Image (cartoon, rainbow, N blue to C red; front, side):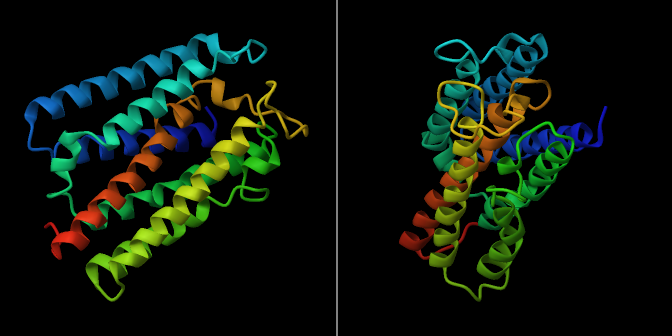
Length: 233
């Protein structure tokens, strides 16, 4: 197993732990149990799909890989705007909703290692067109100065979330148009087929969606804070 694979598995374990931590803040025990069960089932199922090699065929229309992308982001959106997680936003410390995005530094290191190993194209690394590492680098500073030191207004955290969502969307689009499908725009080699393999299938299956969820939840929480003029403990 390569160093990139080991680091990526550590990232996945961290993201799973963070998801469970956030969900357990919900006032509804039923929501928590059901959501965690669905999430862990999806992690296991998507991992088995990647391990089986079923989605490695990018020649079909639509690509088989769609069975990972569509459910992952659909479930993420539904979770982000669910009533159960809205209740949790009253008790989750806003510092953690932003600070946890530091994990994206490690994700970018993994992508850089894969690029150096000629597994993915350069545009998917920070040597190319992927600037998502900036989200990870700035996350602890925004969290600290907005919610610990409280020297920056909440509007700064809101702007940061929107900017980092844009960075995330940028690399998602780059990854999609680097795959060997009819949507491919980047013709340099190698194509992006890494995300169809285990364990990297977990990147689109729940790691990237969780980064998106974190921003949406933070924005929802910041809206509540500005309306109420308070901060949860």
